[in-house]
Length: 161
Image (cartoon, rainbow, N blue to C red; front, side, top):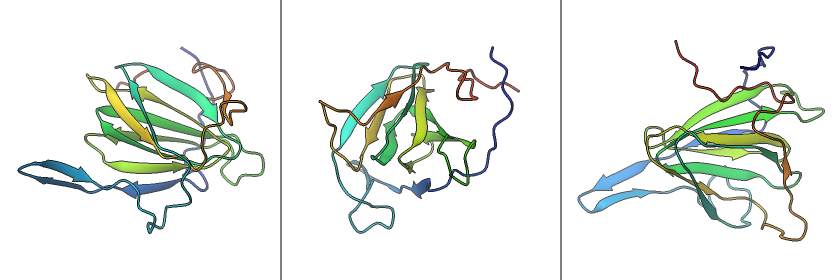
């Protein structure tokens, strides 16, 4: 297990969390995720869906231009953000969010913030991202590090106790 200096845990600058309301009835459920008239809305690039099998980590990456809006609509994920942005008032801060069936929230991840997630439910989780930019297949705005890099002070193992 890697040993790290504990990162600062205050809220990362420009990260926004929106509580989502689930409306159930006898037919099923409805949950609005993002509307053009929401305070959190910036602009629309595309919408995509990805899944995680239990225990799988998809990390780390960041975008230079794109802002992500992440929500887990099935299962549970642990979303982790790390602010490595030069000049940011929250540089060096780390945030964890537990999203999904038991915690309906949308998290806006600003450009330049490293992020990734781990499937933490017993079944496959389903994540929707609403980025502000379209994916450019020829020049992707995506920069990656391995999930176990020493450049980000985080250990994806379960914290017992």
